[in-house]
Amino acid sequence: MHKDPNPAAAPTSAPLSASGPLDLDAFWMPFTASRQFKSAPRLLAKAKGMHYWTPEGRQVLDAVAGLWCVNAGHARPKIVRAIAEQAEEMDFAPGFNMAHPKSFELATKLVALAPKGLDKVFYTNSGSEAVETALKMAIAYHRARGEGQRTRLIGRERGYHGVNFGGISVGGIAGNRKTFGPMLGGVDHLRHTHDLKKNAFARGLPAHGAELAEDLERIVTLHDASTIAAVIVEPVAGSTGVLIPPKGYLERLRAICDKHGILLIFDEVITGFGRLGTPFAADYFGVTPDLMTAAKGITNGCVPMGAVFAKGAIHDVFMQGPEHVVEFPHGYTYSAHPLACAASLGTLETYADEGLLTRGAKMAPSFEHALHSLDESPHVIDVRNIGLVGAIELESVAEAPGKRAFDVFRTCFERGVLIRTTGDIIALSPPLIVEDAHIDQAISTIADVLKTVA
Ligand SMILES: Cc1ncc(COP(=O)(O)O)c(C=O)c1O
Image (tube, rainbow, N blue to C red):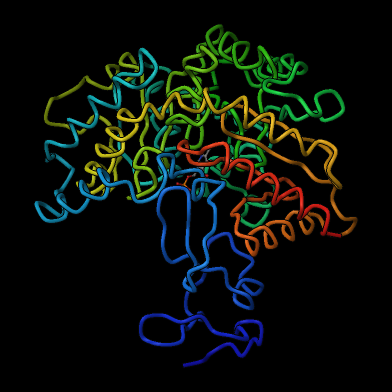
């Protein structure tokens, strides 16, 4: 078998697996600078509470909840037990024209937690699949009510909605789009709201930019409302580098959607399950979407799962025609997987036991204070925060965008703190069990590292 002789793929000291040196060759890694990684791998082997441990036993503070998903912290007993017991009791049940009790039990609990009016839930296995599902639901909804010409989807520049074709089409990150051809037709984009000239170093919602929601009126003028099915936005854009909506922006978007009969979809894959100090961002902003995607924190990241929450009235439009016919021809083999449902039930119990879905509100002031102590640090051009999400934006090195933040990421990891970077933006989103001492450790490590990077 051919093996790529790329010397970068052979680390100087190969990490060990249980059965000897670890072969890094076969695994084609997701969203990874693979050659750099394989020349100096960063491996995690164990996790508990706020921490990871490397295979060598080095402790690493998790300042990003894994990948914005481990909201209750790692290895929580109720979740671990729920998964183990479910695996023992029933490993899999088909979900098409069949079901298992926990899928209903969970749905009832999820809609009780969701913003009022979002009283139906459809299960997927990831955020990307939740996005595809919501987009399809929006188009199919209009068709079912006799407006089949409403197929156009509106996203936003710098939006991240996962990696499938619908998601990258409505998404707005050039790096994720440019490689993959023409994508979905009939898509348009609002401008993003990031404006450092007016809003740099804002604490909480930036003051300027609500008027950018009027872009939707411009798009309606261009295409006519009768062709537009839905608008999809992240209430707070996460993966693109934490873009916080200007005061009044989401309210305005909601009003324009209502005026023109356009569905509003909130992608709450990151903001759902307590990230802003409320169960969902919709609660934080007092703006209820028509459809809402979730994933990540739904199972505390323990078993893959995503979901779309829908208004009852949207669901009910589908409930017509002969009763033996599938009303919404969509679903996944693993929709409502028993292990995912069990993990989610254990997760919701853990959130409730410890008040985690609102704990972010309690911790937000000290998080904000600590984060903004970096305002004057070298290379920093912006610091912003909302709930338990923060971003530190660095000036890019000329000709090497992203390199400075990546160097900070690597050095922080060596110094025992896991952060996340997008371009030259450092994002922090600690598990919701975070204490002040963890925040101090993360911020002081970043402060020290910023003094050392070029
Ligand atoms: C807002 C948003 N939507 C969708 C996704 C995609 O989720 P997944 O990676 O589970 O497919 C993400 C992932 O970070 C996200 O942040």
